Length: 444
Image 1 (cartoon, helix red, strand yellow):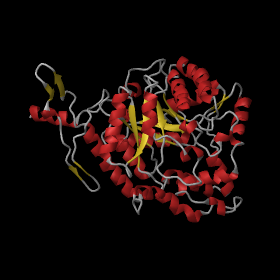
Image 2 (image 1 turned 180 degrees about the vertical axis):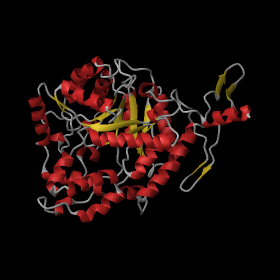
Image 3 (image 1 turned 60 degrees about the horizontal axis):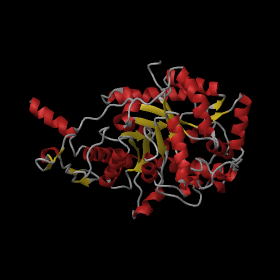
């Protein structure tokens, strides 16, 4: 067996990540609000020994939003339901620091962690759509750099709340009547630039200590934040060379913060299309691409530019570079990649279709897919992948036909290493800050 094991996550994305996926003849049109659909996908992914399920989120929509985001479950609600029908697979949900109170968020994720026996993870986002502000009674949406300063402080507060309880704080001695050792329950008493939180949290630490921290930013601020705080990072890379550069950069940054680089997992997104032959896989991808209208491709493009309306421009003309500033204010990493394509001479319509129907290098036979996953792992382009289902039924095909090949090559587990998400990802249990301080005082 290889020393390095591929990590795989599966994205629960209802009717699909695109604007037109729901139009496929075999698609379930109400999948984004169907517990039965998510249960089937979750159990299939667990059968394939996937490390975690992931639920993305956004707190702002409009009529141009994709069908899944228009009408879907709130992440912690569906993950709590899925926890009851799975046993080992991790449960990772997105929640924004910009529009949630840290006490509530800490309590919700700690509850999911207990409910699932230590399988929770939090994907930390700052919300880049400016329309989010009005949904929370705010007139202004924080700027990019300011959002990341908030995220730094917010994450420290949430971790501090999760550490409110030392691991042995609950005595529960019926004979003496002592339920709690009060010396091991701690107030946070945080007062910072953005937040003021007293604590303690009203739920103790879980079997994995704290939920696993995921993060999905690839901008300069996002990379620095991830290197300092994240234990796994979602990203998007066009090819192996780009993946290797990102991988090396993030690992070096983590080392620069005094961290073990192996405790930061790099997980690019992929949308594999598996066919019994290479020709069949290409046909299936064309089937997927054929669902997409230019109108909806332009809508997809607008998502990275603060929901800018690109339909007012000529799709056969050059990309309107005057909207670049909207990308800098919202999704910097995605918008910068798109602006790079514009610099290569692609028209607006070509760029929109590329965004709406990403192919990547993951279209092929089971053996070809396994080759590519192995190449990215062994050549340090990633530690694993965060997978979308490309077409209805592709998850089961991947589990039945690609996973066994990866297992036979010794680069993917045949069973879960433990019961918690941290155990299965090979991540350390964080020390409780209050216990560490007590130990240091005793040693002194």
